[in-house]
Amino acid sequence: MSVVIDDETIDYVSILAKLDLNEAEKEQAKKDMSRMLDYIDQLNELDTTGVEPMSHVFAVQNVFREDVVTNGDESEAMLANAPAEKQNMFKVPRTVE
Amino acid sequence: MSILQLSATELSDRIRSGEIKVTETLDAVFGVIEAKESLLHCYVTLDREKAYQKAALVQRRIDAGELTGPLAGVPFAIKDNLCTQGTRTTCSSKILENFVPAYNAEAVTRLEAAGAVIIGKTNMDEFAMGSTTETSYYGVTRNPHGTDHVPGGSSGGSAAAVAAGECFAALGSDTGGSIRQPASFCGVVGMKPTYGTVSRYGLIAYGSSLDQIGPLTKNVRDCAAVLETIAAHDPKDSTSVARQDTDFTVGLDQDVRGLKIGIPRDYFGEGLDGEVAAAVRKAADVLEVRGAVLEEFDLSLVDYAIPAYYTIASAEASSNLERFDGVKYGYRTGNYEELHQMYKKTRSEGFGPEVKRRILLGSFVLSSGYYDAYYLKALRVKALIKKAFNQAFQRYDCILGPVAPTTAPRLGESLADPIKMYLGDIYTIAVNLAGLPAISVPCGMDAGGLPIGVQLIGDCYQEKKLLRAARQLEAGLGRKDGQGLTDGSEFGEVCHETV
Image (cartoon, rainbow over all chains, first blue to last red; front, top):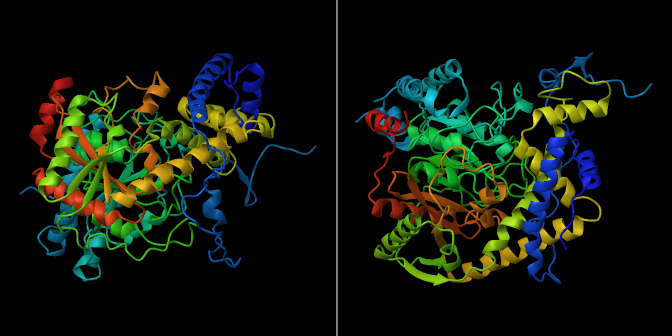
């Protein structure tokens, strides 16, 4: 069931991945992904009918806690890493006209 | 005996007895760093000044009798995907080139509370994606045993730093073999604990269901001491397990009489180098002589672990790495007009090729129309792999096999063919899918003088069995405590080969 990775698929996936690929990168990505998916396709040799997908190896339940603040105000320390900030907030390009 | 020949725990014993000062150990380690680091490049960031400040503090607390543990005063290196408060943490990526965490990873907090002195952050494959440390944005690390060879990866800087004597012990992280394989390539001990044993709080996530933090050390005793120090239940990591049996140094010297060891035939098939196979079999014989019972068996499904892993790990990576968008921390592109363009340009300029490859693959296998066929299929195969291990552990206390099919490849040989590189993870990767503990122990050298490691895999929560067997193996192979590549003259010869 080999999937053909065409330009349309790569364009769609790069939107999902939020990556801008130039033409050379796009061609490489098409090649790499096709090869990798061909390789992954060998999983279809295994019959997994009736096998539940295992997302966690232990039978752990959701872990809940009370929603209380335990740390102090660290906004200044956090914002110290921001590429741009203004009035104690992260600054991003205008999104609403 | 020179300070550098001591193991971490031997060093701490002498520091606590007053024989050696903490600053003397730093003098020794920074002496090695000055001699070797420009060639080896184990570290992305070194913080000498801060290390000496901490050393003074630790010395005072040792003198006051407040620090009595086996790691007090020991100089440590930390893989650069573990957050260190006030010290740059890059994940060896351009996108985090200026990121200075406001908090420590829990494992780092626990080490520092035990009196360890952190001297720097080690090089790695970018976001831990790679097997050679060559995908680092900050340049390659060289293997101290042969400087035209890779140290392995992704925790290559940590393994090389321990092997070269540029620290006494290090932390790494293991998502598909990233502690065990570099440990094997660099001739040090490396352990990946049972999933949930060490808190992942402050570990910059790659594949969250697979990632575990663990020690890289000169010997098994150090490994047990480090693991004991960093293992603890942590409410800040919801996958953290509340274990009672984390006293890993207790019973370490017990013999292995009657220990049942399974040797998977399918780990000795095509692709395994002859010298590696011979050294690993010799290691098995050592354990047999000491009373372990060996039996060959078929583990099955070995070939399917890699495709299942790359599907799951890439899927998780594509989700985990969404957070790097140039808003909250790290690199932001200099040239943008609107928000989405800023995200895309920031990420495209900030991530390297291997990271982009895995994000794209992960985005694809999670996308509508392919989710069932790829992602869920891989999770179903993961369940089968877990079952195969469960069956094996009904019969055996542990499984013994190679860590990697070969010794360390030459620099520049691996990245051209990703699938070939991924195949190098064949013996380590299933362990992460099944959440198991496993340890890599040095067991020989190839004809070129490159180290070979043997892997012991245990059932969940059976680290003590592994450490015990590893300790016996080490004793049987005649490796002495603290024996590592720490002697200057020895290194001189190694250098000579390539200069």
